[in-house]
Length: 185
Ligand code: G3D
Ligand code: MG
Image (cartoon, rainbow, N blue to C red; front, side, top):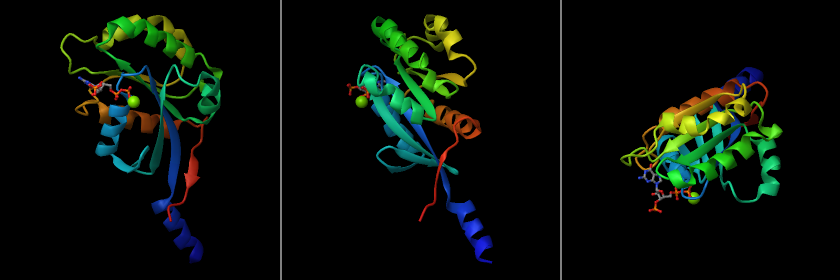
């Protein structure tokens, strides 16, 4: 009886925890995106949300920071969200360089990658096809990992649900990086 009840308890309350990095240049919209994510999903504390049985823990990072630590964090992450400022054509190549460096890391092989073309509310911003074209020579390095380029307006929340739901689906099905499991007590 105890086993049955504890099994049921676990089924209902155990969460699978996944770590997701939010990366991008400064001013891309990382903080705004995380704020929107927490309002749209069940935000628990500063960087954590629950989506069904999955619990996502976010770490935000400016890509020019702490490069020596990257591999350590990459090894522990289940997903990466890379935020691009679609209004900043001038810094697009800088962003692409950082992106390329990030996806070149062997530690991130097979880890799902959500690319957010952010600030789509601004007239004449770069479109998803524009960004895909600018990043096209990164395609071989993306390889077989799951990758989605999602148009997004972090300011209003447009595209946030689609991006997070896609990420949850990918991290849950990625057998190469099993979750950390936690009982909720
Ligand atoms: P960061 O954390 O990546 O550095 P922030 O970026 O989230 O701090 O956002 C940088 C600026 O971009 C902020 O403006 C923020 O309001 C704006 N921003 C973020 N997302 C969007 C968006 O989808 N559309 C528009 N139009 N602006 C956005 P401020 O003026 O506060 O510096
Ligand atoms: Mg920030």
